[in-house]
Length: 203
Ligand code: GDP
Image (cartoon, rainbow, N blue to C red; front, top):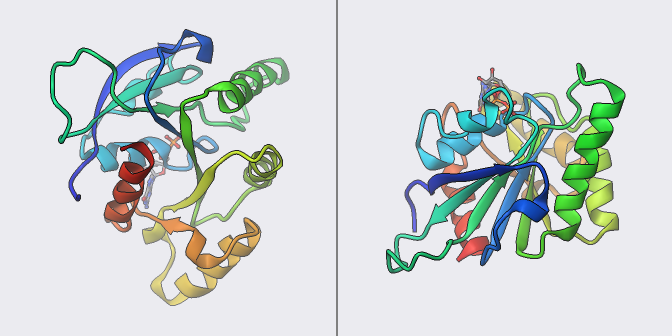
């Protein structure tokens, strides 16, 4: 089924233990500036949704959204499937101790959140995987955690260079080119494919 993913903000939390149980959850991770807020807003077809995650005070929290299933009966009062917007990692301005705190929060969430069906790892398609992205992928693989790589900013790669770039990004992530979902929040490229995947993970 096509169409935007309907998201409603539920709450922010400092620790995954504060989050309510969910029937199924996905999460988006990536370094700051990778295009995470833009992508979440585009998936939902909303301008300022993930903005809640970017407001001062919330950037370092787990931000929980409910994903509405248009087929589900309304009004059951129970929480539907959810999506968590994780803080961007590798924020250079953060002092070491604060960075360690985030890491603990993110790793704790990824390892212990039982309803987690898929971890969407965002890599900047125009820049390629950074050292931190590769570390994250290695860590997810070592832990056997389910993940999918999405490359952002497809429109920033010149069309003449796209094939080459797709191979480079795949190689940098130790994946096959077809394993990576390329998207552009600006042009809308790949959004329907990603929405379809989100629905298969959650519903
Ligand atoms: P976040 O820190 O990961 O939430 O990243 P943002 O969504 O705030 O985006 C970071 C920067 O990249 C902003 O200047 C965006 O306008 C830009 N950006 C995000 N997605 C795209 C995209 O698909 N194409 C282009 N050209 N720029 C993008």
